[in-house]
Length: 478
Image (cartoon, rainbow, N blue to C red):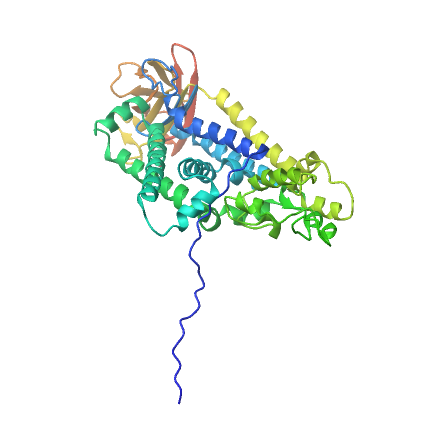
């Protein structure tokens, strides 16, 4: 009886083969350089922009002040109760993403996604230090770690780490005064939360941008799965004109060469792709439509004397039309269609509503919270007293006197705890918690009724601005 050795089961997974994109020049590559410079410049420099708001307010132009629960954006100040502004901006961001995806495919992924921007920056550093694609491939395949390979890798990793640390450091500067925090960080006097945040963001930036790269886009990011629902046959995306390029082959003076398509199978489009895919295989989840393959292919087509556009931005309807010999539709007709117009209208409507709400909001505000335990107190003379906690908000840059009063309540009086009259001073850009008492005379209608609607008013004595809140006065139950 013969025995056979058990065979190891075939693995369903394969080790990742690092991608080393080749350098490319062209319109879309230049556009990506410009967008990368702008986005990185905004991210790193914004915390250092100053904005004078007065002596009692922070002078950082963009600041998320968690300690005082404020968000400052140049001349705009958002308070906690105005979170609807943030919610509106998030809705606008979502609609904007839907709009651009519906019109131009994964243009966000290809040009402005943080993962794409920092990966581009890390690849640029890698190319400066280790050379272009072929040199990096040789270094990667070199098994022996000699002095040169160690020097190049350490130099690259140290540079990546410095960029990653600057990325984490820039993030924490948005949450406190940047110059002060920088001094505290350098002198090791900053809060441990700041160091922890920088450490976490440094590690994720270093790993995601340096080693995981396309894996984040393919496996971790949910957007490639979602974006399919945002696209249709009129969406502009990167595609290969297969009917023009096939059959592919080298254009040599040989028998049958005239039967070949325009594609010379040079793999230039594959070599420049940061995702390592072949666009000639059709639309793929990994494609981020960065259009670098367009630049590479156009360069090759010019060299071999063929028309540009073998790989190009186009829509599925263009493919069907061109196969039949018709001209593709103008890009503007692909962009302006019912879906994109609807997204644009919704996006603009929310933006206009937020702007109107921003300029119509008052610089003073109040909230009223009745004390429920007990709901009312009966004084020795029979007077019914209710107690309220009133929060007075002063959004001005200086202290303001606020007059608190009662409206539409015959037989009722209002007094303030700790104040001889009904006027209290609210510090600049802050909230004052004020205990308020409302009393109803024994023979008044409010004292004998179970519930009476009343209105508390607050007026800025110096400017005349006012705010009001409706509340309930609890009386005796018969």
